[in-house]
Image (cartoon, rainbow, N blue to C red; front, side, top):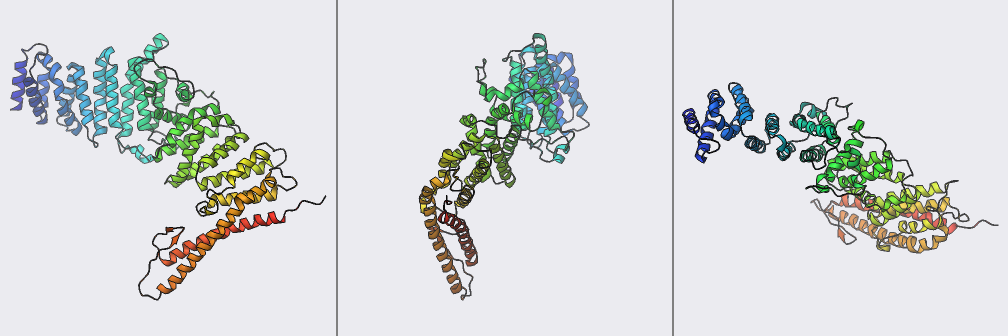
Length: 592
């Protein structure tokens, strides 16, 4: 029945010239042709389509059969495969390239998540054939095809383990490899233009579409991928894909060093219909930088003449972007890029002028968030390591101003404590012979010490919440009073001591006595309540209020443990504070 209908509509349409077919003709051809293919009559359909008398019909209406053909080809039913392949080949040769392009891209867009990889790999070659038929007017169509294909490919999960990439369990690897073959003739066309003219216009439409493809590939999927080292995975399709993307960029006239340094060098007007930020997305350039400096991709086409400090400056904007995100994959890449950028820089060499740049302020702030808020312990530890590495690279003046800025802005006792520990190390270094400097001795040190030796709310400061800063501050003060003798006073600490006593030590002593008495009273109360409640047969759960805040519902044993831990902490503070008070009381200048 369907075959007869197809023969009838084709015979009737043979007499119609050009594109004068009615909507009814299109509907009948589509319905009858689809049914024939689905019912296994592909051989008969093929014989009708290849008939020279039906060439105009195939040119105008043949694309309607694409959906049915693709579904059969995806199912891989052996009996119909040869004829369906032959039909598709004939359609690609005779059919309208514009209609075929739209029809093929519709099939790509409609693929469900389970069939994306199969659909993409099946249709890339047909799409390439159709686009090449468009001749010199294909640029926008190439762009549309690449955008559609990448939108689907990026829906595929990214392999995490070596085994997942080797087995290509999600299909992403074969799609990426196939995409490279798909763009190859278009890249070659641009290379020929460059070869013939020794240059190419930045606004050559095909070049722009290939640039957009590369930039999109860098942001997705490559920014999501953690490439395996060649020692871990000798043959890595994703590593090959990343390498080829960078080679394509170079082939179409994009200088990798220029791309890297866009964030540092003065931006210029880019003629054409694309604004610079759209043409070169920052996220894509961040991935490019990571590929170059962490994964060491395409090192043979990237010159090694850029200074380490300049590379660090270039990368800071990308590091800032990556560390400002919350996805752990982005954070990891940001930490890796920052670490690799810093390692190449000589210790104690970064000048203070760099701290005037926005990124040299914002990156440490983002790094602090990673160190304190990231749920992944490995990333928090890595963040701390990179944070220290960044400190080590600053020269003495830059360290001083960096410490000062962090103490004013971090608002986290643990981070402030870590900064104070670094300050102590710098003071210790400066007190050694031949290491004296203006920043960690004398008049410049004292303003820094005032930021260190302070309680944000005086005696009412929460000592437990600020424990890390308080303990490091006391340890620093004790060290200075012992190491820097009163008659030498290289640090100026003895001159400042009366202010430190009034503004820090006495309020701390008052707050410590109040807190300790309060917690000891609560501890005694809980113990007494426990004795009373133990006489009851029912298990008790009680509530304790500390500093006007109720502790979570806990058993008396748990609350006793919490309160005892707090009292022990106060004892720890008191032991160091007591030692400092003893040193101050015993201070005497040597007899002359």
